[in-house]
Image (tube, rainbow, N blue to C red; front, side, top):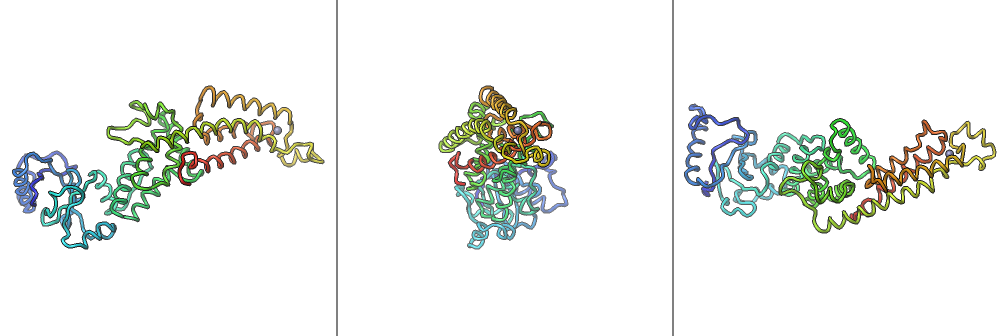
Length: 392
Ligand SMILES: [Zn+2]
């Protein structure tokens, strides 16, 4: 190793170190060699960070050593080349050793006979990527811990052109940040169950939508944006911009922030969503009960009423019912700013269930309200990209 920039003293993730000088079995020739090498490296650069070998991702027959932050991985050029177009091209070019990024000191470095490449990425991302390459990706349930793994894999598989893994990571993220209303509803059901079971805000079930927007921008995955922007727009502005500790959008240090153009998108989209709630309530007052067939339109109303259940049994009473529902919805969503006041998909679903077909005296109007809500929700879902000025 020519750079003398590092000390190699420890193994990442290992149990507590034994006493100095006993790191390796006396019979372990390889261990003695490593100890000697570590001592030399330590003398050469006492002010440098301590480099740690990753416990699992250090293969004795590996042919290249990657360094990310203070972690070293000894892996196989053949495995990297097989999966990554970037590495395939790089290893095809003689000499096989070269620096990535700005660390010119690392150029032509060797460690234990392997070229040493310094990667300008987070060590955690490399751990997740290499595990996915060697063991296959093990994606979880799209919660916050899973996001740390999947986002790292997406970042590095984008950067190093590992197309198959990138697609799998993106497909996995799209389960939680979907492009269809059906998948959105499934995602919301999971958040609802989480909230019931844990009594936490449902926003904690998934990563912050700001992190998703940031990831999508960084890795050119616009598919994630509509759901992420919609989710974000459901929060009040003070929750977005003045989020306190312990709130769903509070971010760790050095965390994600929205760029100026995304703040503009958020503001425009949120205004459109709020406007949609108002028009939804108005439309409920004007519409659904008129979709139910009125008895005077039928030649044998009594017969039809009994047989089909699609006929309004009491137009005047139902009209009054709907007026009351409009008042109730206005009070809840617009004046009280109750749950769903920034979430037209949620509000429409709730409005559709205000007259349950099971209990309502007029089943025709209850069903008309339900199907009106389902149509409105489809319409709203299709509008979301344009609210946030995203390409559909
Ligand atoms: Zn009716």
